[in-house]
Length: 199
Image (cartoon, helix red, strand yellow):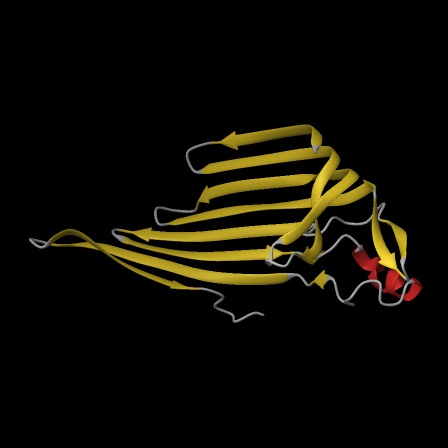
């Protein structure tokens, strides 16, 4: 695969704040993309698509709220789609060409967002992590999967290719202290993933 990448970014930094913003436009020829299927070893099957485009905006920022609290945010909004490409499938002992032009590329959500709130006091650190991932497709058929299945019944062996958007939150904390003369430093560490028990 080959790629031409055009980016424009800016940043700002001072004692209590660090911010950055970036625009990007990437044109791929023969990008290697996942097909949505797995091989017999459970590894994703990949292939080349003629032309694809990835464009969008991404940001990152860290703000020190006071002596104990720090907030870090980052995220992106992007469009990732096939500008020219097809796939070929067997149907009734013939090979059918399926045009994928304008379809979203598998595995790329339009929106991603991460946030970390960090509390630090003496030897204690507590962090609250959040992550949001917008919906995306597990293959390159986009929202046309049912249309393709209706044109060629049974050509694709599944009827759902959309991964719904999800939000998860995690907590990580640690406390460090000395246990002289046995240990110079002892660290107690605790972590709870997916505290809201989201599927």
